Amino acid sequence: MKKKGKCMDFEISYLSFFVVQVEGKGENAEKYSKHFQTPDSEKYENSALKDF
Image (tube, rainbow, N blue to C red; front, top):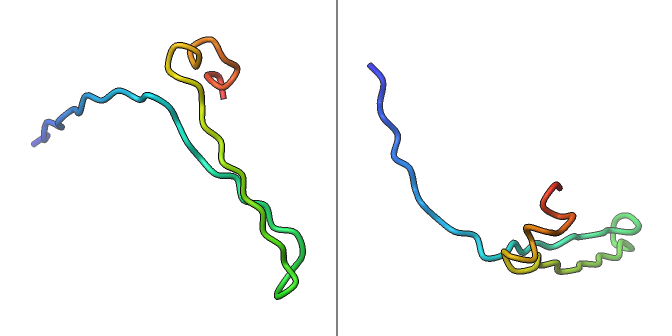
């Protein structure tokens, strides 16, 4: 018997993410982070990020 799944409708306004970089090891490691946010949906459709 197959169960029918439910679909959820949603809209993404933008994506937001962090890139964390670690240089060194152990107690001497330095950590850096940078925040990135995609453009709004209209600009995103025409950007190189869409294919990524």
